[in-house]
Length: 112
Length: 114
Image (cartoon, rainbow over all chains, first blue to last red):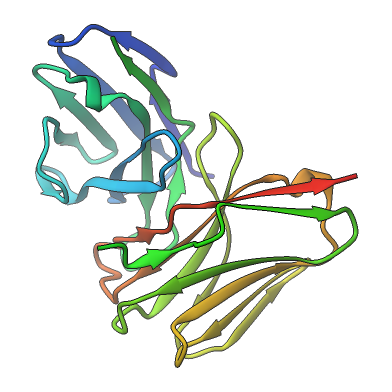
């Protein structure tokens, strides 16, 4: 069966510090991968998606970047965090040519 | 521009009764719709989906109805149980299954009272 891991579960970072969130998927190959953010009281906003190694599409211009160094690894980064980067970050995967996405447990990021 | 809207932020129903969660969309190119359930501090879990070639899909206590002319879909939960209390998100896809991009609504918080 497939599983998706995210870490860390919670993170408190000062403004201006760097960020690295990691997501890995097990039990499948060549998944589509996604990063979402849920701000307080808001819906899920798609930040990045990837259909293959090194292929990243950005949905919203912002202070964040994403990379996919391996088939089942997706990383969300920032060089300098802003207060507005606080939120609940979710990684998801889907099979190629499939609409259903499966989410990880999420990372709660608080920028102080 | 919010392409997928859930206009009711919250809904409260009694255990055993029907819960009806609504979702509206504006983009006529959407051809696949999904419902997700989310507990606090957890990732959403997939519940049920429907293709635009259908108007109804049923899975146990959960039924999704799609009205393409009204650009409206709804999720019915019958009978509702206290464990159903969660945030429910509807999502839509615009035919790009090779990328699988989904557009999510804002969510509706369902409370089922014992």
